[in-house]
Image (cartoon, rainbow, N blue to C red; front, top):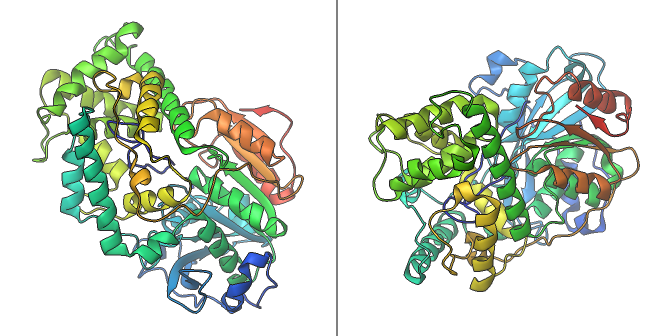
Length: 510
């Protein structure tokens, strides 16, 4: 899943929805991998997952966990190494290969995701035929070293900042907050690691993991950002792909600002869907007049810039957290009731705690006040995955476009000034550039795209399917990603493709 800026064009939250492992050295698939030839002679030392995932041993007793070593810098293969955490849930029946999964982010743990999928898919054709495999990308989750920038207290303080003053002085202050965050990332993670944390390196890591698993080819399921990783891998190593399913497309050909504007429009569409559903109730906090939904929303959340909202949690509800909580709820209709409850709390001046809980969930803050590293990893990876404009005029124009695309997220009036994005101020250069991706071959890829997906808008899936010569499955709904969430139309088509290489019917719509 993707991220948005709170109080501006792009911020750094993210939310991840997902459902849902030998041994000889392999010949290298790409000339650029040659300096790391020795990386291809590994075999993971498999052991129990109990020390990594406390619940995995009981939920999926067959799960195995291990590590694979990769160079931090592929141009210096004998230099510092990163240890990638890998999980494998062996097939329970007649095995036909591995299904490698990435849940998105960037920054989400594939190890955690596969641990959950292993139990959910245990008695399905997928669980019987494939080893389910996940590896945490460099800097992410259980892999080491981790990308870490903020302490828990520093993250809490960052969330209290409204970041909505777009006067020249206000913009300067916001940009200083971004620069301070970047410096924390350098101080705690190191410049060299930050420079090599992008998707280009992770795609090469994925091929090292493939070889360590002893597989000539992989099957792959990528959600959200995982579609970008999958597309990058398929471009680098087309002959290593047997079957690839990409759900919730992030198109590597999109420029960062354009992609963000389209995403904001997607969230506005999902907000409109939520508001219309809410309006079926006479006590909807947004009222029942569609022309007033955005105005009513602003009446509820804008006062939080000056004064925190009431919650049972002593932190209170900040403006940034109210926006973040709203965004989180728009990823799935299952969360709409909590958004309504939180907005009612603001309307009545009582407890708006459900909005704070939604924001905590989005930011991955646990009940003890500790954050995992998903947001810090997200920021570091996003900032090296594309070049961002550094001139202020481009960001002022982007703010104008953002206000038109997502008025529910816009604060105040357009000033002609706007802060540059975190990534425009990032201390290391990008390692990827936007481009149309190539196909790994006919019949190898299926793209799934949801009509009212807020985070990865539908058209991105259409475009990615065209570029990769892939079949497209359209799902009608307001949510982010759908594969293996129980849909009786999407799931059978995906299973038939992965197991039997059967292409979905042309223009399949579910």
